[in-house]
Image 1: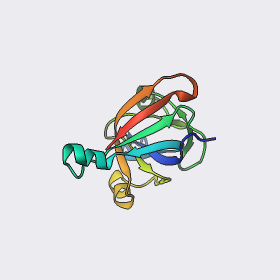
Image 2: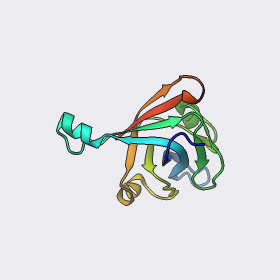
Image 3: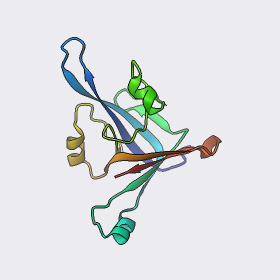
Image 4: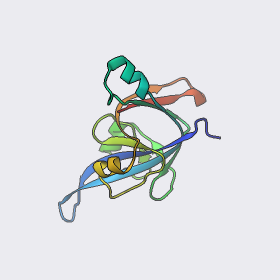
Length: 149
């Protein structure tokens, strides 16, 4: 049973060189995470900062989250960002790394050939991963708290 009610689609975006043509291409590594909690704090930010566009969210991801490939539906496992980005293959893996190369969308939104800009134009709830904090409470209480904006 899932602990939380939401589903998000996580994108780990890499720019890779095609060995055959030496062309650079952008590859979306798409993971559907089911059983997460996406907590939007829009109103609170407006009140505290006065900025209307100060949207931010906290995404709670339990360690036992259901993580599947957005294209094939195969199970994926979490690895740290260094292992993910430096590894030979990213197949069957997902990671959380703050920065330009990781963002998430509320709901199921698997678009292997779309750019971040195109996804942002098509969906209301698209967030860049800004912070990642692992809460190691042991067992099922362990989770990631991901700050998005």
